[in-house]
Amino acid sequence: MTSLCDPMQILDSAQTTLHLPMGALINGLEQMFIEGCEVPLRHNHAVQGATEAENGILLLMPAWQKGKRLGVKTVSIFPGNQAKGLPGLHSVFILYDATTGAPLAVLDGDAITSRRTAAASALAARWLARPDAKHLLVVGAGRVASLLPEAYRCVRPIESIQVWDIRPAAAQAMVERLRAEGLDAHQATDLEQGVRWADIVTCATLSTAPLVHGEWLRPGAHLDLIGGFTPAMRESDDACFARGTVFVDTMEALMKAGDILDPMASGAWSKEQLSATLEDLCRGKHAGRSCAQEITVFKAVGTALEDVAAASQAYDAFMAQGATA
Image (cartoon, rainbow, N blue to C red; front, side, top):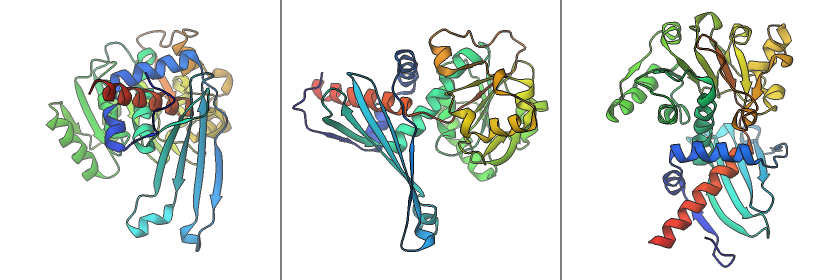
């Protein structure tokens, strides 16, 4: 239990991560989708630097639940940082009491974003992946991709994992980390063969050209696309949408995801064919997968609902730990 007299807390990356165990986070996101949350469109501002190379972008992502929590994630994107040996993206989440507006905590936004993204992916798979899915292919080896095996093992009986990345060394490094955790992990050197082998294909890349081809997907496969979040980004080809039953995290995906916009433009898929959103699945408005042979496709672009749910969960766990210390 928190008090309005409690000072504002600061949770760094390690503390934010510690208080967001994956299984509990998946359940927390599900509950938030059931309860609902106000999520205005994100704000996007250009930041002029001293030189063009120092120009940046500031994103503001607010969300709130009436009478509960209010939060905003700020994301600064400065591509020129790479030349300085610095990360190009930084994010911070500020959590408030929604009844008074009093600030409760500042949390590491990168940890929240990466963990809630992986958790939402696994949450969708509760309805969309076959219950007996045991072969997982992770396409990508970055921050979010590295969390996907942990997330999927919370919802499906994953026995074997393959990792593919355009940088083979990065894929191998991730495989070695997974093996150190006692998992059966291997590097996929041939992406097509990896896709044909997998029960679940989950993609977390920044690709601007299709990586996964629909003809490679085996009957009953689940394709998860969580990397692309702009019209110029794509992880799948049109055939994935032509063959699959399509679901999205929010309707915003229809406006900004290249994986969806391009099949719509070519006529391979139309928005009328959309089956349901993640909210629909969580609220029992759609049953999800209909049969064992169905190919399901989930496209996510992220939502501030997930951020405020994760931040609230981390803050509550942090405060409860302090109360019992």
